[in-house]
Length: 548
Image (cartoon, rainbow, N blue to C red):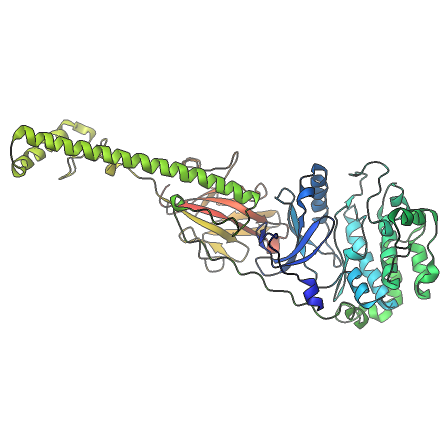
């Protein structure tokens, strides 16, 4: 089986086709937390989507830990880390998206080709040290640095997975005395359940590098309890390592955390030994670029579904369950639509009954008139016009009769045909807004050319927002299920052409009034603003024409 086939596994029947608005392309792997998939941003950039296992998602303690992971990862930026793109800790199931790194994990590379050479190990340690500098600069301790959490890109390693990382401010989600991490890569203080610090990650860095140099763990691969005992009560056998690397490993594996090297010192030590290779053209020496094997060709994005044509809500039909597994925000939108459909059906039913009643009464009245007069239709027609004139004159200032109808124009109509009808709603699904496009209320299914459209999405230094030259915005609060009447009343005196998105989330509802009098209700299904340059907003839009 080829390496590419090993990396990208086809989706199975149990896999969701979409997670948080991201269409899944292939499986990338699985771990203790859940399964990882390949997807793409709207601009086509590949991302790794980590989806939490259902049994973990139902655990309140895990939900808090996962939320902490997201907040930690959002603060980390570094050349040797895989940055967080988007996340939803409250999703069903929870998930997060990071930049996809086209390369194997250190564990996979060593299993496939054996131990790394000394220069490659030095480059690996330098990259991991620089990643830890970025992580520690945000007050975070990784706590689970190991070979499977280091990916080997063509230009250097990437440290990933803050699954059990916590802020280094003393907070912890573990019980006292309970060790958290992978036994073979723990530091003595971590194995003993004591306080962990940035030095704990340096110990794990050395253990991970030792695996790269030896092809196995420095403390053995036996039962976890046995490995932890050796870590706490014995010194590592450094004679197993290549002689040029032993001084650095002795420094990083000191039993006392205070005596260990810092990430900056590890980086300097490695760069001095690498010499000119440390500044190699292309970002990495040839010895490193050979580690990952053949170049990985990432599968292209899944084509978007056929755009939904504008349909009134009364004609809305729920798609088959197998076509698209709904997210929590989409279920809220569908429940709101169901309420609107029911209300619309009842309203139209009432109008139909009223029309039938008036028709029956009118026919009966004319029949009675003919019976009473005993004359032909030609003889009764002038009388009918005379009667209509009499009704018109008796109405006084209330209104004048419409010619040939016998109905009051300005006054209360005796026929439902003269009652003003509410405009029929038009629904548009999966409307996308991102920094490079715009949308017009006139035809939301068709992107306006560049940024020339009426409604635009943009991210400034203070956050992302919706903006328009002519339309006004207003966010609804409270329970979901915004209506035309609610939007119309609230937008009556609204003049705000900008709407900051900091207070919005998946499921938020936004009323929009266009210059031509159209009113729209935009329900957010996917909000991605963690990376403003590639941020986007996706949602369902309902429009009532000329309703203002």
